[in-house]
Amino acid sequence: GTKPTNGFALLHSVENYFALRSLVNRHLASMFQNDSDLPWNISPHEAVNFFLVAASGGTSGGGLHPAIGLLHDVARDRGIRTPRIHVSLIGAEMPIKDRTREMTHEQECFVQDTAANNLAKLQADYTSSGTTQEPRPDGTAFPIKTSHRVWSITIADHSNGEAQHSTTDGLVEML
Image (tube, rainbow, N blue to C red; front, side, top):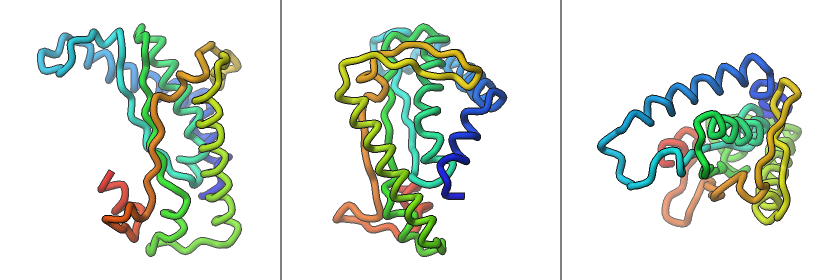
């Protein structure tokens, strides 16, 4: 664990990517079936909110950007014009201070580096005026406006001044 290359490899394998893409597509297709309880007056083909929670460790931290690309790919499959991807990052302090874990110094460095790299990329994308080619693991790619990769970014960590969490599980439950 803790190495982001492991998470990237897991989400960026052809088999896993297309299996997950198919699963998310099936869930969205069922959601598009004229649900009379939808609280908005917009067609799901106009805009859909996706919420992605990621930490800074191995699978989660390394899989963040492939997961964002996958959600955009699914949005293209479903004809969604405005996929609103909201990213909630679990900050680097949470896994390091988690009382149920013991981390080596090397693992702490990986977590901090992954958190910094992910946040730097998210912020750079958010302020870019260019276009990005989102890669798929099969070697193909599709274009999206870079500043539209992510709609919002939130960071949660072990304390918000009001509540303090001593385990990652407690923070995830609160989220």
